[in-house]
Image 1 (spheres, rainbow, N blue to C red):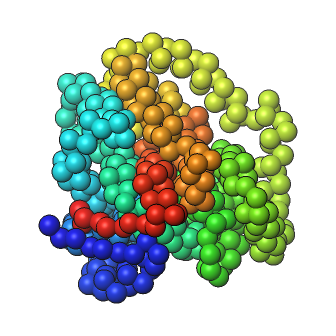
Image 2 (cartoon, helix red, strand yellow):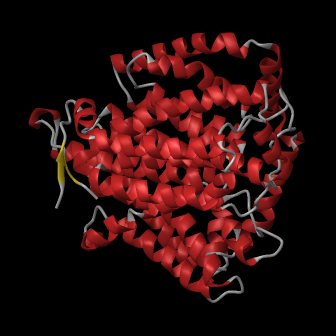
Amino acid sequence: MFKLKTSAANPRLNLRLSALMGWATILGFVALVTLALLAHAGGALNYLYPVAAFAVGGFLYWCYPGLYLGFTFWLWFLTPEVRRLVDYQQGWNPESPVMLAPYLVTALIFLTVLRHLPKLQLRLFFPFGLVFSSLFYGYSVGVFREEGPLAATLDLLIWLAPVLISFHLLVHWRSYPRNYWIIQRTFVWGVLVLGLYGLLQFFYLPAWDRNWMLNAPIDAIGLPEPLEVKVFSTLNSPGPFAVVMMAGLLLLFTGRGALRWLAAGPGYATFLLSLVRSAWLGWVVGVFLLLVQIRGLRRLRLLGVGLLFLGVLLPIITLEPVTNLVSERLQTFTSLEQDASYRARVDLYAQQLPSSVLTLVGEGLGSTGAGSAVASPVGERGGYDSGIINTFITLGFIGTAFYAAGMAMLFVYGFPSRAHPKESLIVAYSVAISALTQLVFTSAQNGVTGVILWGFLGLAVAGKAHAKHYPPWKGNSDETTAG
């Protein structure tokens, strides 16, 4: 079995020395996609992109687990933009195979689950057994529904992918220092790249993004004109983009180096220009938890960093179109009774929640969302602006009970206690809680939002396990078995 040893004290140096071949493979993949787009051969990428991504992901999974982790997150960030470029060159495709790439690469972690299956009996991993059971229960129901096995299988992949990332991070809890550093670095760069592109999108809307806005069946995305778009950057819509930025901006508080200061300005500006109030509230919850959990001089440093971020943001936020849009959106918090979106959500919960909670068996995976589009000639059906309602309807009361119990247990396991006040653990847990708040507003357990929720939840529990076994006075261990 291939083993890679890295130092918890300096994971950056070891990654640079040991991962040259891995980096070469990633750069080769980027070059392949770039050349295909420059040659206007975007149609070929419909299948080449997910296949090549899966091949690169498989190589990294076995040989360079650290790079595999970063590569997977970048696929979640950037694949929707690749899809838009492909569609712009070859014509609108409502069921683009390009979007399978992050799911296929994440699905490689199923090999980790098979290898560590006996661990589901252990207290630390038992919650994942509950979640896996609920999803396979939903799959077994969905297979025999009208939509059929194909829709159920696709939906299983959609629901399962975020949980797999969480399981992977917990299984490799001994590599927590390295994994946290990789994820933090990935998100800091992500805030910078997505933020800069988001500013370009707002002030000068690229043709492929405009094409997406005109064709995609997405509401509340703004108008396909510069200064009128709700920023979604390289993601599919403002909601997922705002959640990614929410997580990245929380990670900026405890990062180091000049990069976070470069990322803060465009990151916060586009986060506000997404106009996603639920993500703004999630960010406030995350900052509140950081201030409560981080104590002493570190709390003062956190406040100081926040003030400096505000200074970095001011040159952008004071521009007239930005100021007007953000201030108008903020004013809606003071008049929610007159807000159409708020009233629609209240009506949704009043009408749907009581009946959905009483759904014992559920409609099964594939009955709603992207999975249903495979079997339905009219596209997706039964979408709900609530992860809570969607879970009850899809998994029924039986499946939801197992799913919610598993998630709740992991939140209890990962809670940063005074005995383990590790700053990185507090940040990871705060991001997970912030993402959890989004379940009220969207299906935050799926897609890139689900990756944020489940990924940082798994990272927090892994950090707690690492802190218990390797407290500061004992030193750290970071031996990783690849794959």
